[in-house]
Structure formats: C-alpha cells, structure tokens
Length: 208
Image 1 (spheres, one colour):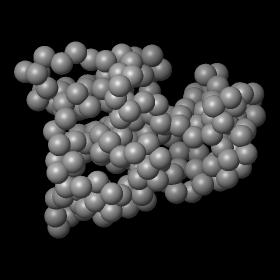
Image 2 (cartoon, helix red, strand yellow):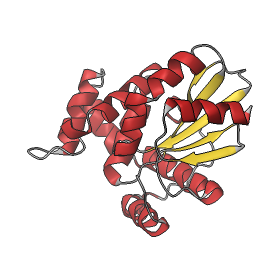
Image 3 (cartoon, one colour):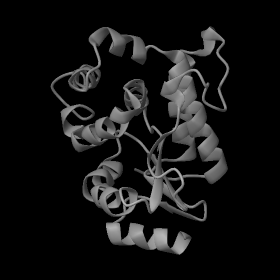
C-alpha cells in the first residue's frame, strides 16, 4: 500500500492527538517489563541472514504477501534455520494501529497467526460495510482468546499506541519507506511492495 510522507504524518498525528494530555513520552526501546513491546520474530536467533518486514494490517499488498508468499518463506527459509524473520508494525491508518495493538497484547506465540488471520480476512473486518470494523476486530480477537474487557482496555491504551507509532516514525525517518510491505534483507537490500517467493529468495541469496 503506497502512502505519502504527508499522509503518514497526518495519520500518526490524528492518532496521537488523544494522547497529548497524558504526558507520556515516546519510548525509543521496548520497556523490559512489558512483553507486549518485545520484538516479534520467527526462526533461529543465530541465523546468518535476518529479514525484516514492515507491514500494515489493513494493507491489501501485505495481505497478498502473507497469504501467497510467506507460507513458502516460513517452510523453506524460516523453519529450516536459514533466516531469522522480524516483524515490524507499520500501520498506515488508525484501524491498522488499533489492530497492531491488539495483536501485540496477545501472547507472543499468537502474534503471527493472529496477524495472518487478520490479513487473510480484510473484507470481514477492515473493509466490512454492514457493521463496525472495530466490533468485527473485537470478535476476531475473541476467537484468538482475548476477553472483551481486555480488548476494550487494549484499544484505549495510549502507551501501547505511542510505542507503535514511535517505532513507525523512527523507521520512516531512518529508511524512508514509501509503501507497505517493505523488506530489508540483512540490512543490505531494501525492497518495497509485494513480491513472489522466487524474488524473495533471490534477495535472501543476494544479501548473504
């Protein structure tokens, strides 16, 4: 999903407006005591190749990659120990921000399955027409084991929102993304937008 720097700032600014009165500082690193803010990753932590993905949970291109390419990446490259795969939340709208907050509040082992489920069903929650996307997201979170009161507390958690948006701003300033998904291979190659497994594997090989 493409976006302009201006639209990204407007989205972040709107979402952050509600936090201004709380006086909460942005966190550059995840608090050691809060597991919700720990890195979400798969694979051998000692793998020689690290692939990072920045994605938005309302992005149709991210959804296409998740459904069509990532299963092969996981089977052939992650599960075999060839790469360590790091997920980065990069919400391109307020709904994606809330969804990322919910995903991070689930136990870490449910993060990837839950985000994959959200991306596989955008038409049933993010782009639903006959009901509230937030209510649809709440139902999906319930299926993943999140009680309704925990969901309500999560979506109102300004500290969690600030963490995600500060990480997003830091990445944008450092790498100058212009679309999601964006990938970095071993901190050598940066590629944006959806790609086939063959293209992904070639980037892994080129970055090794």
